[in-house]
Length: 128
Image (tube, rainbow, N blue to C red; front, side, top):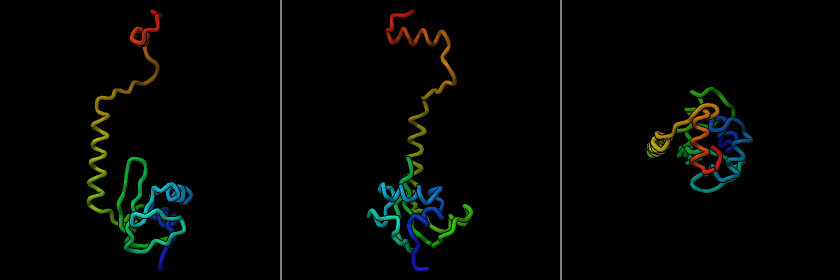
């Protein structure tokens, strides 16, 4: 096998749940091959360098094997290797997001009567 369509390979490597999601990401410019924007029909070959941005995460990987069929996660992990710099960047970004959220207190449900009155007083609604 010389090459595989990029959207099929991304689906087989489990970066996206469906080929249509992979195609949408490629068209949006979230997937780059050797730093260039490409089309979903681009053939991926072993040794190609891909940059994949998915939400807050950005992966810099090298294609090590080709597959058109989606298998289990263990088989998908053998299709690529992630660069050590990419792993370090993702871990640092995750730690920064956790640190930014550390002081955030999420409350469940509606506010109590006391909390609602304090909020109205703080807003200056005029109701007491």
